[in-house]
Amino acid sequence: MSAKQTYRSLLRELPRRTLSTPTPLQQRIRELYQRPTTGTTGKAGSAGAAEEEDGVAQRRSAEAAQFAKYAAAQRTYAELVERYNPGMTLEEAERIRLTARRVGWDLPVESEGGKN
Image (cartoon, rainbow, N blue to C red; front, side, top):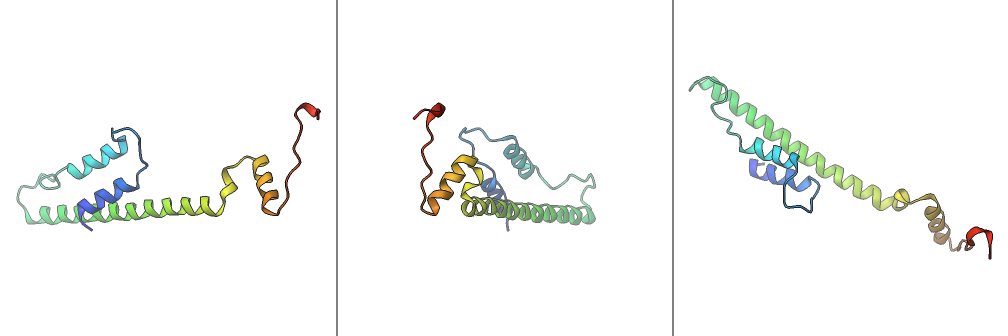
């Protein structure tokens, strides 16, 4: 996976914002991808330094791709949990009402303050 594809897949998995300004996490990811990877070790022109930098860049790219896959899997998992447990976020009274409706019952209407 190329750096551009990895970068886009990372941004795709981050939560959406309604504002046009990027989140601090998006800014940090952008900075990491914009930072040049050559010439950072201080060893001018040595073959060992270039190989080391290539190894670091490949390792970071692999880690980023792995994190993008993990984030996509977590998003899918959350969607599946919500789909197969729709009452998970409901209040208890609403969950009981929907359970009764599922088996064909209607709960009696409760009067306010004990008056009919």
